Image (cartoon, rainbow, N blue to C red; front, side):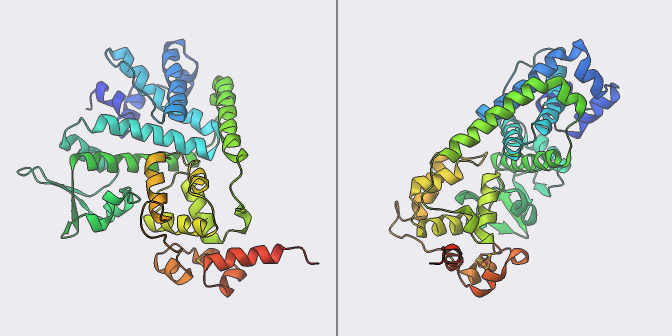
Length: 344
Ligand code: SF4
């Protein structure tokens, strides 16, 4: 049996669900019973922190009661996140939970981490003599944040289909796997009426903050870019980045070089990226400035449709009639402008 102290630190584990089940705790009890008021307060704190600090936050977990309240606050926070019903917020909340788990995981033993990877069905090998950890390359590609240079396959050695990773890398892979799992689970669930009623004032307050955040971003003009005229490939990449999804490097590269060719400034490009729940200004600025030639000797040209297809970032099932006539995303965008020019 997993100890309560661990469950409170890692409430996403299957053993946490079993703990709640074994103690016959119903959702209604957790929502109504004065005994769990502290758990409800922490639940709200989790979602608030995820939104404002990108981490659901650290609390004292000294007593059994602290640990139970912390454990129960997790399903409460998730239910609230579902009721806030905003894709940006849901992604941000999932990120906040995943980052918090990572901060704890880096202090755990390799064996503890490997046990957790079993829950996510990640194929890991651990050599007890050398303490070397390796991951099956398919799982690596699936979970590693390959948008960052140090995670690219080209920068990692592979032996018999396995890639050697550090303890810290493994914690980061669990972070990504957890983020994806929470994202999927939040998307699948519907807001429960009783959760909405219990937390209605907090839900409305957070919805307003999210709306304000969005308005602030949308208020500043972004060059002459017209989202509606973007080709399907660029629309998809931009939407994925803004939703905090794991976009491969080639996708980011294609979008940045495309926007640069449309004469958007680096700051304007950064602004588009800044709506992502996992936006890190310094790292993104470095990537953008490299691609646009600001910090390197070359300003890269955006790839044409053939290359986009080779990289698997042309959504072939979504292409339209204009796509069929064009061979470059830039020609698509320019043709859209011409199509919509008022005829004299
Ligand atoms: S055909 Fe070209 S412009 Fe159209 S979606 Fe694919 S890559 Fe983009």
